Image 1 (spheres, rainbow, N blue to C red):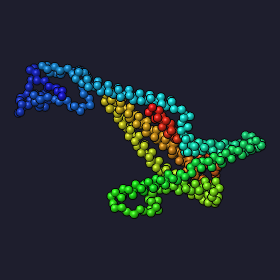
Image 2 (cartoon, one colour):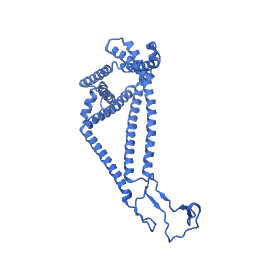
Image 3 (cartoon, helix red, strand yellow):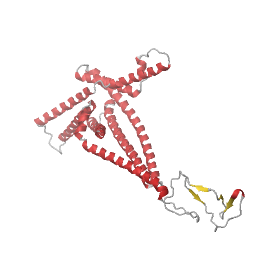
Image 4 (cartoon, rainbow, N blue to C red):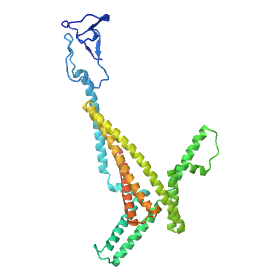
Length: 377
């Protein structure tokens, strides 16, 4: 450990001796001539510039030979880590460039959810087009209200296409109630296995007990899937029309309540994300105002900025998800409460906006998965 010896040269006057070999200087403080001042090894600011001790008999020059070796080694390690991160970023950018949009859409359309979103985009794009077309034909300022035979045929075919896409989407999501049912049974199985280890073997509980103790969102998904399937079978002609309409009403109510619950959970999650963003921003400010070395500050700042960027992206997609849920809420509210004002227009625009937002999020998820695969190769 380095030390600094206090000057005791012959040319400096001394004050009268104190007990225990201490002396008092002209500042009035006492010290021991044989002791030395120890540099704090935990100090964040060790001396960097060369300076000479005031001792006339023992002159020590603090040059980079004392502190420069360790500091240079640390700086080299920081530079190497930064180079590795730059290489990773370069590889990540190259992987982004190699992933084409057509490949992302191919992966999306492999799944039933992806095909459902694609059909929804087509369905409601045609629906919005027909709404504008109907508004244009009714307006005498835009064109004469004359329906040509080929025009009526095109409109009829588009309406038939929209109806067919709607039924196709209903068939794509058939038996979706198996997912929440599996989750409920798996949770009950895990609970029973844990209790059987601590207690004596108990008789199995009835199935009604299992469903009554399931989480409400999972139960809503289960009933929503079952009632939606009944409505689909009604449209296929397997079940009566009246039964299908009742099932559709139950499905709409389940969807309405589940959307409200999802909005509440999402707002809570977004509040946590905002709190983390404020914490990271304050940390970034403190790092910028600290007196650390340039290399260490740059390294810490880079890590904090990446964390902040990650939280900002997370908040962005949470906002996208919230807007999508609001559009779903508007759409289903017209069916639940049987609203009439601008029914077709509002429902078509809300459904199209919801389809675009959900497709964008799905596209981003599959794109990130493909980029990750490219970086691993």
